[in-house]
Length: 352
Image (cartoon, rainbow, N blue to C red; front, top):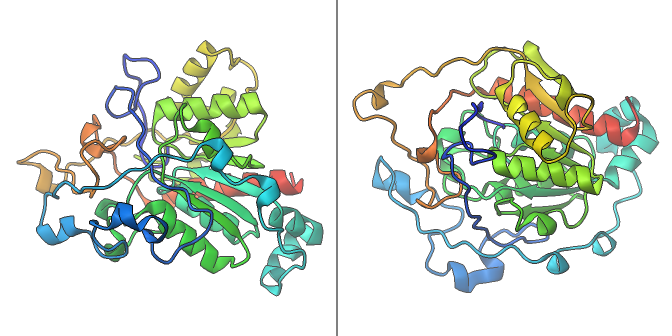
């Protein structure tokens, strides 16, 4: 979980905020970068505000007004790109990779240029992981997140600025990594991962998955699916409510300590037949630092928590549904991301 810790709830494998299993709502999955996020489906977006304008919620004042966002259906797996149809990665190493070649070698960079990584969850951890991999010559990337940028994301998410509030996290991040690595094939998908969308969102089949999902039900589904399909995966546990990046560790899920989300993952995966008393084959990034209880901001003391995010009220993961809002820091989420990106690069290049 990129931004917040998790404490066990009485319901099994439920939404970590609401205690209820959520229904997915999702939008289109372009296979490239478009300057206008409504360009290929103009009839759907014709009544929407400009895709690259600041959030109308902020202009209307706080607390925010309900945004009317049109969700679309994730294409079925047979309509998603397949590996054979993707453009061939560039075979000549550009001089921008000079310093990286000196670390992993020519063959290592060529391997990364041909590799495909899918990142689920593009918040404080996922956004930094995407940029780290783009700057590490990964040539193909699928970026999945159902959410839009919120003003409260600015302290830790790379695509979050005052002027990008209300825009798709996936599309914004895709533009950023494409600017870093112009030859990259990047597929931004604004969709909610669950059992019904799993096949489509794992097409084309990636060489590696980074799980930075904030929804426990979806997280368990993704990890179980990656194990079943033999897709290498690394999972992120709780990066929120902590301040010390030196306590971050990478280890098999079975050997984690302190982190409450890792404990829940072990319990739920064990119910699904995944042995967790010995190595599970699921590496996780976690912290051994104890969770810090949140301070209450002055603006919440009289009224209680007021969400200002520009999401629909029926968003799959709205912050109003959370039992508690924990604090976050970019030096924690970024450190989790760097540990995950390092693991992916070392695994793909054999530099273990």
